[in-house]
Image 1 (cartoon, protein in one colour):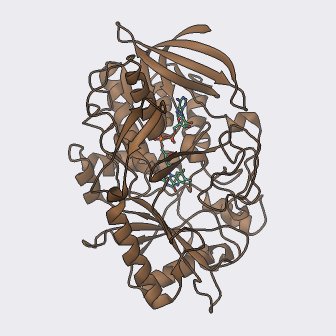
Image 2 (cartoon, rainbow, N blue to C red):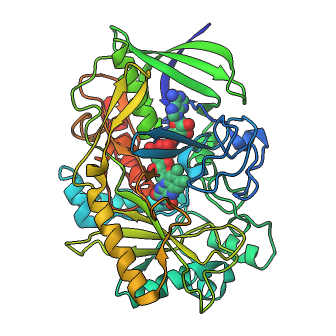
Image 3 (cartoon, rainbow, N blue to C red):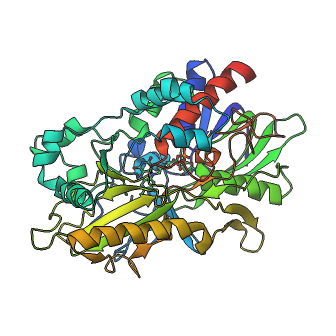
Length: 489
Ligand code: FAD
């Protein structure tokens, strides 16, 4: 076992980790990042499309783990997409340098200001909407598609049909900004450059077009010369030392997940940015092993961001289906948030299967009036969740209302071909909370009762934000690290 002493350690290279790394380095500090996944850019390995899953498809699995149609075998490899299964809920996560940005749909959605205020009553919303959100949008290189392009691009028929049907049913739609470079996509469409979004690439990574974190924050961070990224390094536990430093038990693996080295790292300041599930597992496991003492808020206020997947089969069948080719990058949303009885936002999602399945897919985002909680299960020795049908009751009610209303005027049925009973109530892409800002942590992300330990990731958000969350996670990270640097360094 190798023993190392490092001043600043960041665990995880998703949105929180990327922002923390860049700003610390810009302020003159050396930073070491420990990431359990692969550095894809450095490895030279290619990402694979959804219809022919290769190395990038699944985290150490021999079968694919997409939300549906898992008919493919894969070779065990440290792939980009992981899934943790709990009772009543399955949670998908990104693995690799860039975290969730490698596998996500790139939707960069600003939460509604009123809802942001409701979720974070102690934050100054004006600061966020005037400063941190615009900063996050700039650094993430958020852009929007040209309306003419969308109108004429055959790969966006699914969206056009989705919007037309929503309007017919009386719903309002909105254009959704993204970090995928839409100018690149226009060139893809004209076959001027290699195709990515138009070639079925997304949840196993994009080879082109998508401005994942390795192309934005981490690129800048590496240019400072102060950021050292160690991929295939998994932190197993955190021990608090009497001088308020932290000892990390770390394993280095190969791409088969086999341990090749063990390291003990002692750090002065620790940034826990392992994503909601990773951060909670590390905290609660270390506490269970008596290595760390936690405050009683850790684990509370966990939620699925109201994720509820649903769809409709036999969509637009007589007038021509939803199209053979789907771009993997969503551009449309149905905004029903202001409806008091049925508040929801829904992504009009692509289904890039290379054939016209005349099916519309929706990832709904609902409020989460009843939160769940996370705890360490001493029997399975894993993170566990308290989460039941009660927690998704409102989302289910909204989905029933939405699908019924859509089918009534447009025809179509509940998507029985995609989901057991037409509803994917257990599908979650947006785990949030458990180490909530201002509750488990102070107002800049320092864990209450633990000096020098900061949490900067999705676990700061109390289970709901009303839209896809990475823009908010990035803005919160900018806010937290600014205050940490000015107050604690
Ligand atoms: P992550 O991005 O999850 O990063 C955490 C990192 O820590 C990972 O790289 C992980 O490998 C690493 N890690 C974990 N544990 C350890 C450990 N013990 N040791 C070392 N490293 C560790 N959001 C949107 O806003 N828009 C979208 O369009 C969108 N689409 C999505 C589609 C899919 C399929 C999925 C899965 C998610 C999607 N999301 C989307 C959600 C978004 O990607 C996440 O909310 C976001 O990535 C969370 O950021 P984070 O900083 O909290 O952590």
